[in-house]
Length: 94
Length: 434
Image (cartoon, rainbow over all chains, first blue to last red; front, side, top):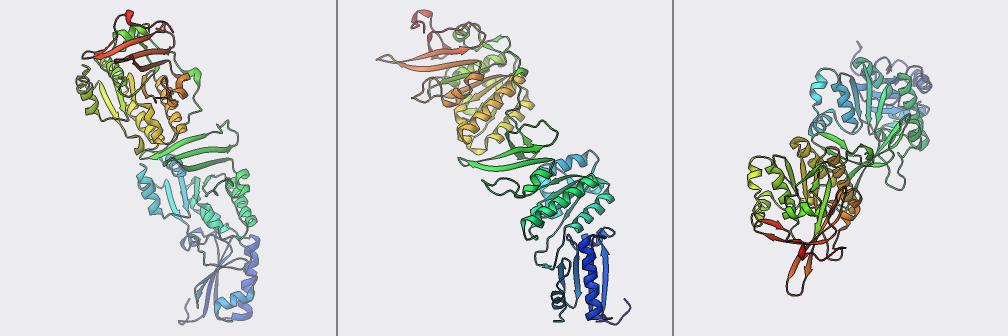
């Protein structure tokens, strides 16, 4: 991304399994969290493992959905991401 | 075992995918090499792909999830390789991230449904829980799979034996018994004892000389070719001399003899037979006589049997001498010794190899040890050698307990060991009918 270093502050990738139920829920949850708490200060990449298995393989993503937070702290969270506070804690916001 | 299946499929030109939760691709290559499989070459041609899936046990759980990403990786990679055969090694490692048994089972069910939909052949390996709960740990795995094989390593009297058992195999008339198997430089070999069909055995063949004139007479013509023969007796009575007489005579006649000893090295055997005038040296030099020497305790019964069968396959002997079968129990339990003997005898019968076995008796059971008793029904000829205390000296006696298909002697026959081998004096010394 052609942006200054350190921006956006929050970079993450969500590995989903196509239209599988848990993946759809996780995608909705993380999109909501980003819109509500991170506004423009984030980059969220959605990767469908069925379309890009090499990306999943490269990072040993075996479970779906998996949220990989790259910055500010590296953290891996699996599941539907129901618990918003847990995500915010992982991002260092709460 | 799974790896061997994969390897052979890859050698036949099929592409295979190996997913391991325990070992790196390098470790898989290394392991394969120790059992004689070269995976590197297959990897270069694109027939074999090994990948280590590392499970991150530090990950944070937040809601429901599944193994779909793994399935996506397998599917993607399998398409790339055009692979239909997949092995997932140590699946239990991944399932550990799921909290309860139901979730674990759900994942296995998901995997199974998906594999079937994709029409992949999949080998799944997982650890078993120790007895008494000896199923796969996941009840569902037992019934969703088409074929379940249980491998087990157990220690009996300090000897380790591997056992394989087919628990289920849909659409197959499988043998449900346990079979011993072993792993060596040629991979895995399964040695089923119970699959042998008795009807397949040829009957014993023509009479052949025992190398001892008096014994030929007592047996009504000699041993039968391809027969299983046991000579039992006390220590020092001359069992090895009987066997060596036979070996020397056969070699003189141009036949090949494999002399297996679990007791002595070959130079010691050759040397000790010089005193009763039996020359094994000449036969050994012309290669008509070969020795197979092994220490019973050195290996488990399966390794012993496999080593001996390989030797038989290479040398293709006409006759086999085993000195002695009483040493077999030192390879493990009585059961293991029995298994070994039965398989050896059946193998010899199938290949029409005469099998002459020596058995060391114990003072309390002069005619047969447990080893002989156990196999007596499948032996054609049983000969007992005993010491007789006459009051002022010790005599030797031979009794033919049975010899199938012959008009054999039923007398106690005196014999002595001279400088010219075993001699039976004329009938007047015999003690009468039994």
